[in-house]
Amino acid sequence: MATAARSDQIRAAALEALYDRGYDAMSLRDIARDVGMKAPSLYNYFPSKQNLLFELFTAVMVALIEQTEAAVAAAEDRSAQGRLREAVRAFVLFNTRNPHEAAVSDAGFKALTLENRDRIVGLRDRFEHQFTKLLEEGRDSGEFVVNDISVIRNTLLSGCARIYFWYRPDGARLPEEVAELISNYLIAGLLKRSEEEQ
Image (tube, rainbow, N blue to C red; front, side, top):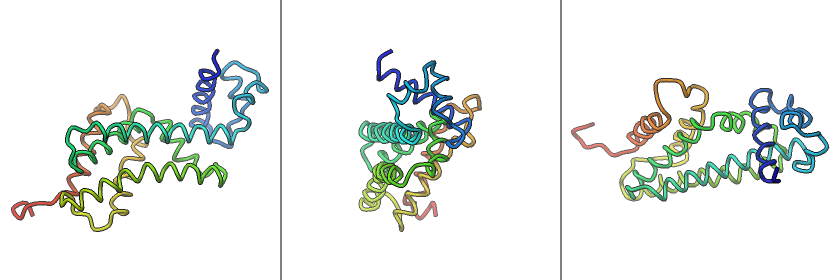
């Protein structure tokens, strides 16, 4: 098996181990067994459990950033409202389609070393900046009523981040429908209303 494919296989097994048992209970020996290799061989790919955790976090954050940036860039409606709607939809879709990644990223953050945590925070800041920028643009253009950018941004992100707690693939709604409902609801709260609507 090619090195890249084997690394992906190990990361996938580690993700499931983290989701099922948590960082403290996860062992590289167990992961090696799950992917059909001997433990010493696994160290050629990931030198430590901490390194594997950091690689997982990095992969999740990079995928989330890239998917969100792509969705914003492809938005047909180029207003701040239209692009923010696509950013919210992308975040919701990522978390409904990757619930284990979302859960591990949420629960396993404190298991990172301080150095690795700082690196992941840097990626999170890059992700959050997309929303900050769009909220600022919407406020400056008069599309949004926003008194405190950071509070509104954190509210938007919190509303999307923990969807994995309650969303079920076999439920009544498809991921795309959930993304549409949530994005419509969150964006509506930012928009100016006419006097007749107030």
